[in-house]
Length: 246
Figure: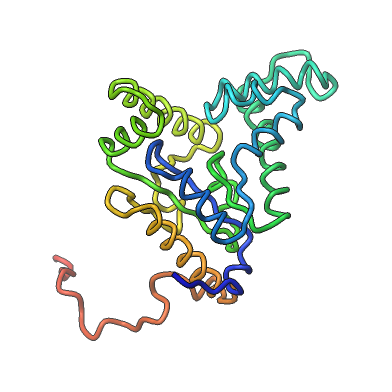
């Protein structure tokens, strides 16, 4: 499917949220290859680990798991940089804020570099205010996700189901703990795609088209955006509006 790379180049990033086993990670790789953009997935873990002076393995063990990761990172920072903290233990809210600032710094560095595809890590919330970022969520029916994990990871059905449930729970808890948001909220995204029937190449096509179309609207004032754009008033009163009762 041909795309207008000049239009797309105006965008800084694509964020991808995904249900585990929906093929979201694979789609991110295909997008990066097609657009020639950098895939920022595991690299975020490495850079957060560097920022907080912990090992990559330690970051991996707690990735997208919410409060447990927050407490671990803050305790590590307290040992390494005690001047940053009081002697009394900090409330979870304060710990969350410090961790979120570290992650935000890493994500903003990626955005400053530009033309990046960021997978997970709350990036759809961190970058929600930027019109030059395209936000996508990829979902699929549970039974098809089980089949995907069984095939890709060589697991039995029971183990695949348990892994999906664990990963989905961890990601949901992470976003709720860090940002008080639910990853299933469709208003967080420009596009939500069900990969249950559409193949992953088609999913990649749709995202690419969406990025191009959003780029074309970057110059439009915010107050002229939305579903009302280009529409006039109904010729008559909608039939489902009831007159006020006395």
